Length: 247
Ligand code: PEP
Image (cartoon, rainbow, N blue to C red; front, top):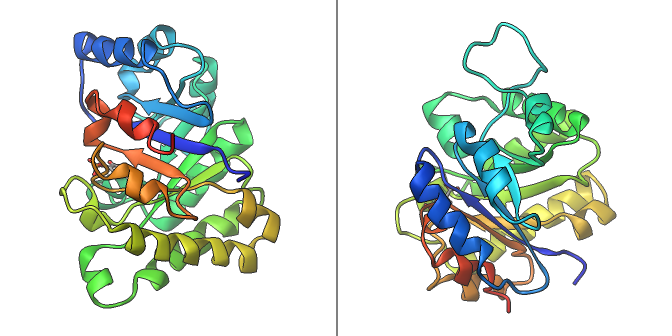
């Protein structure tokens, strides 16, 4: 398979110096399978500390970044600032940003486009809410989110798509491998039809939502699941089991 397995850890608004150092020390001393890319996303205030403490092969992501380089945007950080700190990745469009902070598809697409222009790689999150799944409109929701991105992004080389059904995030209700594969396959076909066959073949589509060391290997066997975005379990030693779930 051409696509390198990808595992991201989204620490959300958790951790302090001491607990993050423990996580980093565990990652620094653990063995990873050969063909896996690992990216961890601590809170913004700890990005520099984590970048300087974690071993080089592990990449670091911000959990958010704004759509312009600088200016009067109190509380925001820019992709240019991430670059300045040697942070290579950013998570954009996470459902918590969409829901709690009212981020629109359009704002998210602008943020993705600006980060890519600056050279920051993007984990772009999409996914349906429970009522949308129950109403049978999962593919429509995902399509709308993808269309918004594709209107501003032409080159998807540095984008990883995270399919994260909102009903599975932080709930302990993981999608079954079949449920996840079905949507991943839909996304892959959408990329063929709307971007290009090459993009579809090369773009990692990762799954997020209550992934644990106990359920990751079943999900990882599926053809169109190229890795995971992990929340809660990325703060625990079992994150290493998830990283190695294809091994
Ligand atoms: C996430 O926050 O992206 C996530 C998938 O969280 P959890 O693994 O805790 O469901």
